[in-house]
Structure formats: structure tokens, C-alpha cells
Image (cartoon, rainbow, N blue to C red; front, side, top):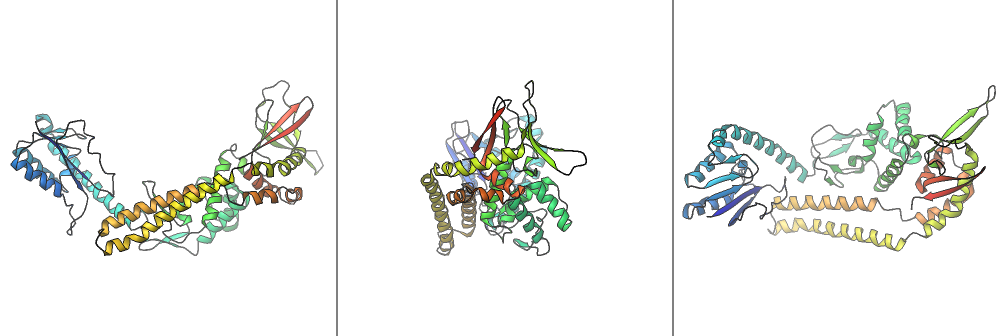
Length: 438
């Protein structure tokens, strides 16, 4: 008994199939890649070879994944099925309900062919999108706010891009998404939701990159609105804010969302107390969900703030000094070298096309894969701490630095370095333990 298999795959749409993943003991596998002939049809040279071989030495079974791999149209698929079955070859589709000897399935062949027609139409649309990706063209859909769509790329809209730029700058300055959203509404009358604002912050388009529905990103396809350094800082702030309780990121007080009571393990919130007919207010930190009886008492906010600043000035330089900077530098150097190697290969592709080593379509596919790999490496590099962390730690270890900041500015820097502040209670006394992020 002779069993053969055939696959047709388009490198633009799917990975190269595994020759051994059939579940049968196959004598030979014929494989075609989705290369295009000059008139636009797929060149299935291995399928033609399969048909010639079957005329001289017929096979008993032909395994295929899907019937549409036999041709670009329903007519081509039907003609090749008839040709194979006329030679006595039983066709089995492993991913579709089709076996040529099954009379019930053959009775439903018309319905299956209609499904094939829909699949081929969908495939042609996806191939068109894939070819646009090879050219680094913008994906279909609405153009992101701040840009306009040209023939083959995004271009900056000079009337709306300043709004987006100001939004990012406000977020970088204060680290609060909700404040940045309110700032846009107040200054420009541009009302967006918090969800939209979060999408803006993580949208690769504003960083000069193009993202596609397959989650692949190509870097440096158009002029960015924010720099790479600003984008890395945005990502660090978003990761930092994700660790905080809901709405704490936009709270007006610098310690909001950071303080935890070690006695009852409850997060502590900032409460404001005023007296009638007096303008003066008193701030306290009290547990949100204290289960103790009596409940853990509230603590004066300014006292906790004062002691937090003292501990940060004392311990932050020591914590940074304990970091393994040589190892961090080695990781950064390794990623930088990998990016440089990929960029060097990318620059060699035009010469390979000119010498005939690569055809234009293969070169475009290779360039696309190289550029997506470069984007992934750049994303890993952006997640690493900044190189000047040690010098920053020395600068912020001066008490006067903290005292000169507003609460919003102090909130930004606290969250840049502090993971959590624990209240350690001892009878009527209390102490602090500051846990740094690194």
C-alpha cells in the first residue's frame, strides 16, 4: 500500500508545515510554497509532479490537510479531485470531513465546495493584507488620532498631533492616566475615555511603529510622536501603576496606594478631616478593611510622609548599590548586539536581490521577519531599568529634593522607587518599613 501526502502553504499566512505530522506512515510528501507566477496564480509545481508520478505509479491514498490546497478556484479543486480519483487514488482530507470513498460525504461535496469557495475568498483577502505588511503599509481600519493616512504610511496630522503629544507629556510628568484625560478635556476640549487614553499610551503607532492583527510589530515605519526613551518611561509607569489599588494612581496624595498596615494586612487610605468654621484640614492614613477589634487606629499623614522621606534618603542609595549592574549591562549589550546583527542582515538583502541569490518576494518576506524580530528585541531592551539609576538615586537622596516637590510630583517619584510601605505597630507606637521595587 502506497501513501503519499501533499501540502500547499503560503509563508505570508502560516508557518511551514511539519512533514511528519500526519499520523500515518507516509512514503513521500510533496510540498508547495505560495510563490506567485507572473500572471498571479500560485505555482503548484510539486502538485503537478504528484499528478505525473501517479500516472506512472499510482498511489493508494493521498493525504491533504484541506481540499482548497489543490487549487486557487473551486473549478481547479474539483478538476484535480476528479483526476486523482480517476487514477484510483483515494483522497483523504485530515482537517475536513472528506474521504473520496465515502458516499455520504461525496453527496455533500457541493456544500463542501461552497465552503472552499468562501475559504479561498477569505484567503485572497488575507494574502492582500499580508502583502501590505511586507511593504510596511498601514493596516486597514481607522487612522489613529494624531495621524493621517498617506498612500503607504501614516503621516503626522499637524492639527491633532500636538494634543496627543501634550497628553503623553502630562502623563510622563505626573504618572496619572485619569489626570491626563481630564487635562485634555480642560485644555483642548478633547474628551476621551480612560480606556481610550490607556490605548493611546500603549499604541505602537505613536512610537513610530506599525502593529498588525497578528500581534506582530514593525519598527520605524513612520515619524513618531514620542521618542523611544519616552515610550520606555511610559511602559515603566504603566507597569508600576498596575500594581496599585484601583484609582490610587490618580489620587492627589503621594502616599496613596502605597501604605499597608502590617497588623491587619489592609491597604490604607488617605482621609481628610476638617473642623466646622475652620479652613484648616487634617490628613490621616486609616485601614480600609481592618478586621481587628478594636480597629487599628489612624496615623497622621504628615508624620508617615516625613518618616518615608527620611528612610528613602537613607536606604535608596544602598538598595541601588546592591543591584548587579554588570549583569544588567551585559544583558543590554547582548540585546544591542543582537539588534545590530539583524540590522546588518537587513542591509544586505538589496544586494542579494541584485545578484539573483534571492527573488524580490523572498527578500521582502525575509525583511519583514527581520524587522519584527528587531521590534521584539527593542521591546525587551525597553523593559530594562535606565542606565543612570545610580546617579538618580544619589540625586533623590537629598531631603530638600522631596520637600521642594508638589504632592503630584512627589507621588511620581515615590512610585518610581517604592513598591510598598508597611506600618509596623508596637502598642501605641509605630514604625515604617519601605520596600523598594528593585
